[in-house]
Image 1 (cartoon, rainbow, N blue to C red):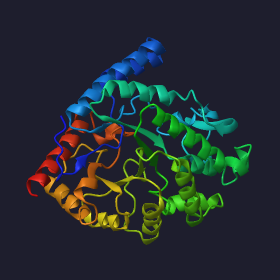
Image 2: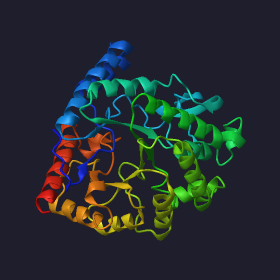
Image 3: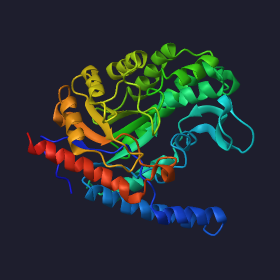
Length: 375
């Protein structure tokens, strides 16, 4: 039930949830050939139905399908465009000595909008399930993420992968713009652009990878800004665009690094988004002072509990983080969230299970209520 009041921050999620045991068992059975594709998708539907009910019961005002159908956080969406496909590689190595067993993007033509993109029907399914009880957020990888994937996979020479390198930016913008417009036509009012690029643009290892391809992180920043801003330029005024940044699921952006901070500040000040989901280390609340660069009227969603580990954070520390954030953002425009999605890669090593993720949400709700009690 929604109990948010005007003097407490909203609780939000990054998007993904760990699947329950029954869905994992169903996937195993499908892989073994004991369960049909249709039966497996029916199980996915049942799990998502229950997930959305539980999200609403947990007090979330904006819900997702938990990305339960997702096999890859980015490629699943991209291969829905016309002109893109996926190739399974089981031997050898790919760019920068990545491990084997990767799905590589392949192009059958120029990237184009697909009116039959599979994400559309998935969104419509979510919209029907909520039945007005909550708002639905559609999460998709940022257009800049797609450009960077092509750039790095081609060692900086886009012509190796893409037949029309001179039109790549325009092709991505058009495909994204039309896709966003169709989501809106179907009733979507919240779209989240996920990106790992902004959280690691000046990471030394990432810098090295870019430089090996002849790309300078400083020079690519303006292009990424252009890609994102052009892709959302024609959106209706009541469609909220949220920019979610992270280095990866277990690594927080290096807010302390002067070079990275310069690039992150440029993003905050110039990306045409309505809200920013920014992960922080709860032990370093001073990093939240970067919100001073957030333009007035923008929403801030601060990720301050670790979504990749089962440990229980201290509520006093969460309250301190909220206090720092409200120096720059009014509480009416502030949300608190996990630092990453719950669907982490190595959940066994990190100790997460299906119930611990709900404990994180309950902890955030408790902290938000305590904050309101003191105001």
